[in-house]
Length: 159
Image (cartoon, rainbow, N blue to C red):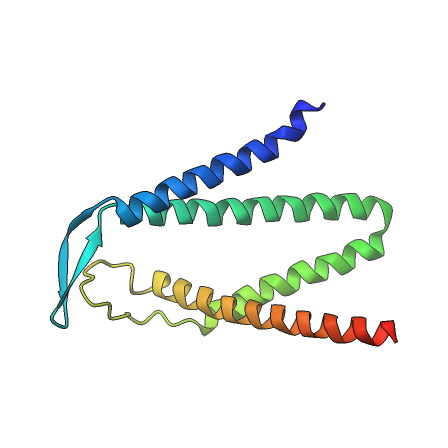
């Protein structure tokens, strides 16, 4: 039983090591040429695709693990207290609604990126990028509001 408790720690260290390795490759792994932008020459990192792929893998892992934990906790809570389980379900539904609202706020119009000639800057990918930006703004704002509310609430209770 003791050995199984080490698996998350080992997985964390392996993921962190791979992340550091891919990041180092991206920043110091050389370049595949340069690009002239407004009279300046910018290097094009050699391992850009590896870096982006690693980030996609990490985001997918976070989403899958989070979804798995939410489903497991919902099932466990539902067996004990159905009312409490339904409250947690409303939070999940709220999160899904927030993601959908952010998706519809995004624009599928083409993003003009200097030096980029691919197709990932138009359509669903452009809308996904906008949605992620809006979602990030909303979640950072919610975090700040929660921190301020927590400080105010704690100070009010201590009086």
